[in-house]
Image (tube, rainbow, N blue to C red; front, side, top):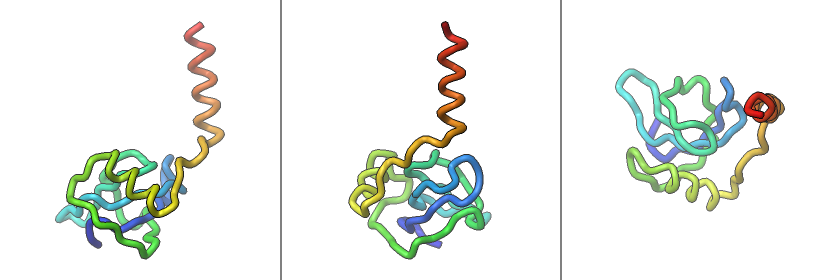
Length: 94
């Protein structure tokens, strides 16, 4: 595993969202960022696409998003769960 590898999150609430590895930890975990939350994750929960981008360790969120957009990825549509949660929050604030 190395910094700059492009992957898709396959587990958790960010499943199906593209991300880039921005840090590799000694314990075998990696930190990812992209259209998923910046988070330390188990690599078994990622599907590596086979593409690598030139990015520095600990790159900013904006840098990661620009790199994903250059590769042709776009902001994924909100999941049904996210839409329902947002709608519920709007109702409770009224």
